[in-house]
Image (cartoon, rainbow, N blue to C red; front, side, top):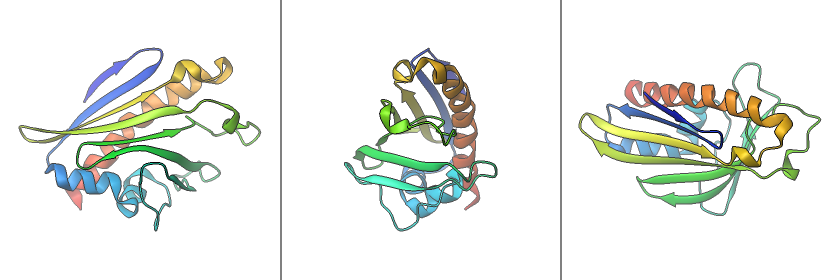
Length: 155
């Protein structure tokens, strides 16, 4: 897994030993996404301009909602959405903040499919939350790419 980070963006990449079509389905079918990401999104679709929302199912984070507005869907190439990073404090009005942009990009490489996720816009997160949100999402994206790879290769 490659790691690159700045103060404004997290970038992580993984090569999954599976065809791009299979990885794309795991990334964009909300039933499959729910399974590997740990959110209950069944019955919804990732469609540009639409909101996708549901409770996180990962132990300890059940009080948090996965809540995104889809920006771009370019079949088998790009899925991008905006969300509020690490929205774990129920007393904070995250809607008053500028969301970050999460972009998944897929490309064919020898041995499978490269998935690169970039979350950018951390410089717009309020200073009192920025470092913790960045740190937690940096760790989170590493784990989520591993979850995606495991889901695709074990399904």
